[in-house]
Length: 301
Image (cartoon, rainbow, N blue to C red; front, side, top):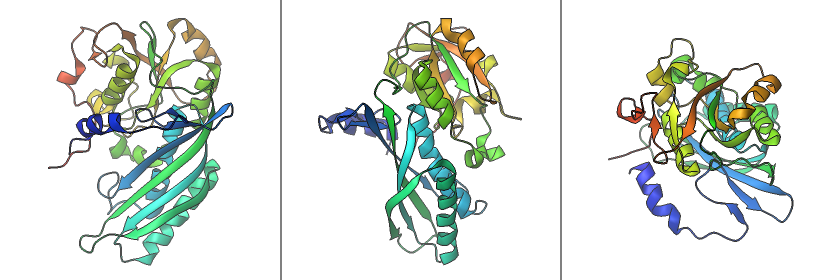
């Protein structure tokens, strides 16, 4: 399986009902139910020893990560998260693991005001102990506020929230805070012309933003806001940062900085330029993907 190649083959053939305002290809799907607000829907999962290390991660933290990585998708659309459904499969023999997982999920849902309103529990085949958790998140966003990946234009600045890199080493991948309030602020204010959350790696997610907006991106590696002890290579390719990457009109930069109400960083790391959509160039117009790992992609032999 090659994740990107497989999706390119499968997704174009999926039939969509007229109520599908936005189908596959963004952080969330958006459904038009006939009001001025859209229903947002996304699904994501965590797999033991892929998204977390089983021998080092408590089930409470696994559950919280599962919910928060879904909340990050809602944030990238400028939406408000409301409801969630869980599907959990495992062959873990310890009932305590399950009860701790559900307790962690309950506490995290209460923190973010999410109603856990359904789901499914299944067993995996016997053998090596494993867990797979899949969560569907539902939320709402006003039609005139929804932020897509496709709104950037040439000359826009490429902005990022927070810090990047060394997410696994610092356990940021477990302890991050989804940027829900920042996503709402950027969408409601109109500052964000296009937006995505960084989950698979800065280069890969910036490529997606560029392709959707039909733009190339010139990225200033020296400007990257690095997490403690992180390298530029980690910031560009590791992923699991769950920060917001967005396009901002250049003449709005000073206004955004002045109005920014949050205590985490806001950094300009590049700009959208003419060129092949999705190309990510350094300051010498060389492709960064030729010298750095672009991000994480699920593959199997």
